[in-house]
Image 1 (cartoon, rainbow, N blue to C red):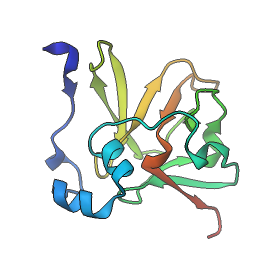
Image 2 (image 1 turned 135 degrees about the vertical axis):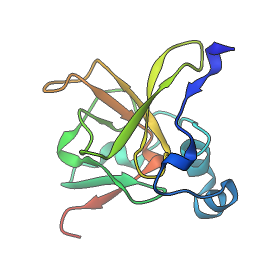
Image 3 (image 1 turned 45 degrees about the vertical axis):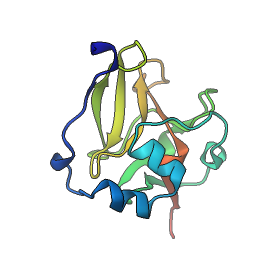
Image 4 (image 1 turned 90 degrees about the vertical axis):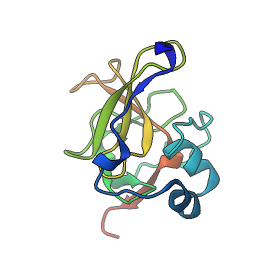
Length: 143
């Protein structure tokens, strides 16, 4: 049924490829649920919501740089939000689950599910990359 389809690229197309068992062994249960099973964390639960220091948000699964902290903004949604990813940081696919069409955002290196992008963000892009904090970690500048 088309309502539940994901036009996701095969895992073999990503530079980092691991079996489900390998991912399960490396990730915390909530990280595995979000990154590998396309889950969503509860809004307002991520400590990354309050992160304001200079630095880089990276994929929690493979460490790939995703977003510069300078593009983070307070969206009021309860999830870390950004107006632009780093070049070659993320990829997008069509997500037609939950009876709606959305654009899924995934790590360009391992394919891990990060969240979705919406066209209601601030200038200069007008985009809101609404990310699951559990799918990322923060690397402060200078560390």
